[in-house]
Structures are given as C-alpha cells and as structure tokens.
Image 1 (cartoon, one colour):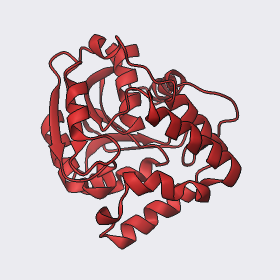
Image 2 (cartoon, helix red, strand yellow):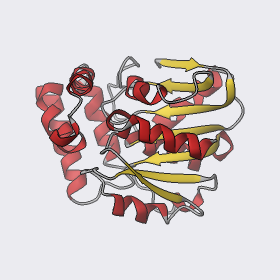
Image 3 (cartoon, helix red, strand yellow):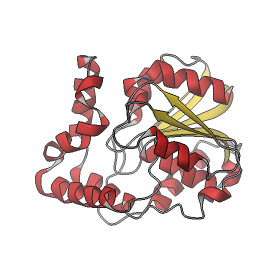
Image 4 (cartoon, one colour):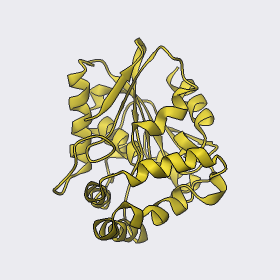
Length: 249
C-alpha cells in the first residue's frame, strides 16, 4: 500500500479517498489543517500507487488492509477516520468491524447499498472499464460526481482527471463490483463511536436528504451539509476542513 504519514501532534487522523481517487484527493484539505497534526493517508488496494487487483475483492478486505497498515505504523490507539464516498463506506466498515480502532468517524457521502438502478450503473461502468479502460468511463463517472458547474477551478479539475485516467481499469472494475455487494443492513446500528455524516449540498450522486436518512440509523450520529458536490475534498476543501477540525477537535 502506498501511504503517507505526516505530523506528530495529537490523535492520528486517517483520511480515506473516493472511488477513482488517491491520497492526493486530500491535498487541498491539508492546506487548511494544522501542519503538525498527525495525518495518515493511503491509496486503497487497486487505487493510485497501491498494488493492483486481479480477482474479486470485498470491502471487508479493503478495510482489513487499512487495519494492517495501522499495525505496520505501530498505531495502536483508536484513530479518527474521515472518508469520502467509498472512503466513507470503508470508514463505516472499519467502525463496525474494528470498533476498538476507531475513535471518531466522519462519513462523507458514503454509499450504503447498491439496490436498483445504482447497482446497475456500477455493473455497467465496470464492464465499460474492462472493455475501454479509464478513458471509456471518465465522462460517466465524473458527469455527476464532478459536474460542469463545480469545475470553476479548471486547473484543479484537469489535475483530478489526469489522476483518474491513471487508475488501473481492471482494479477499478473489481472495486466497482465490490460496491455492488455493499450491504449495511443491521450494521450501521452497531456503530458506537461518535459519528457525523457529511453531505455536499450539490452532490448529484447521493442527495443530502438521503444521507440525512442514513445518519439516523447510527445511534447518536449527526448530519451536516457543506459546500461542494460528491467529492468535497477537492471541490470544497476549505468547508470540509472546517467541518473536520470542528468534529475532531
């Protein structure tokens, strides 16, 4: 796994990226966080610079990878965790499977099921990635998660697309198929750590109202709407950093 670990102050904060993203997706957020805070970022298996995937995989396995990374870094105390989209899904999985490893949790626009049309879209995109590579899915993937009206910073958008296109399409397809099997029925209710669900008010993939409903399934969880769309770490980093600083203070 490719990872970075910076800073040495306070409880470690683990940041998990979105589908098709990498640890660089958090760069804009770090510009608004304390420079000495201990922050751990990683590319999930199959993403960015981490080892690629060549067989079916589950989100549980991806979550296990992250625990092994914490073990490798000798991080034994419970960490604060924030994840965007599939990163939020992994964060929820960590909190449910390894409650002793998660102190506080911020789940940002997380997928919690793949029923109906959403599952069909994921399967179709996986097939397209296998057939045509990342360029074959870039418009369908970013059309709603990074729509035109959020591309006002042209340089940031073009850099994001460049990173997206460098993903391994086979790994990307396997991760998409793993998402089609996501099922938090009866799982969210077991999460006991302080939790906040964060939604971008311009998210066209998962509407704020839907995230707010999901938040009610976690005991004591809060809901917060901020600027940005489906990937606020890139689209509204200042707003997201402010929310994280407040919650994890």
